[in-house]
Image (cartoon, rainbow, N blue to C red; front, side):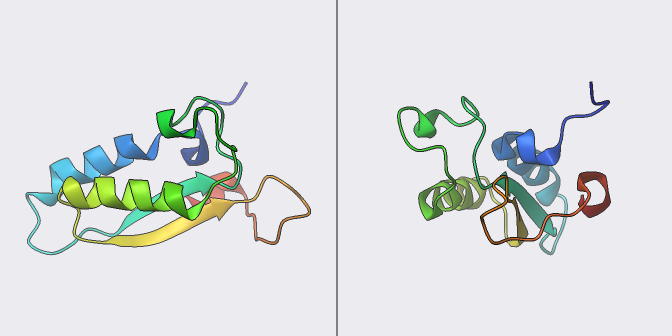
Length: 98
């Protein structure tokens, strides 16, 4: 059993909410990073119910819009972890890349 929950398995709206709370105290933008799996874990996001679990641009747009509405000034990186070896992507040690 892991000692921590991977950022890739965390609801990114919680991360956005945390950054939004800090953003009001910062004059410039914070460097926020979103972590997403290429296959989104079942039940993580309610808008994925009954749809493919593959991450799509719709998912990115929903999270980007949520961040904008929360007062986030910029999203610095969007990191994607590819779960399928046949997909093109670069995976690193999770604890090293976070």
